[in-house]
Image (tube, rainbow, N blue to C red; front, top):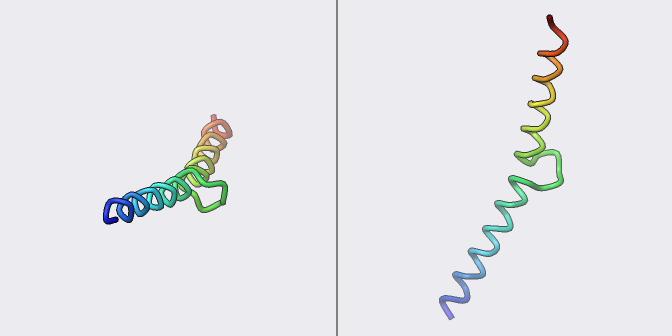
Length: 48
């Protein structure tokens, strides 16, 4: 029984970490990094 509880907790933690890193919302780490990357490209290509 303990193993099932631990396994379910690990799966839930994995899903939570995945949504934090690569979720579809604006607050995910992937979307934030994408926005910063695009801003840096615009800054670098806009100046000579």
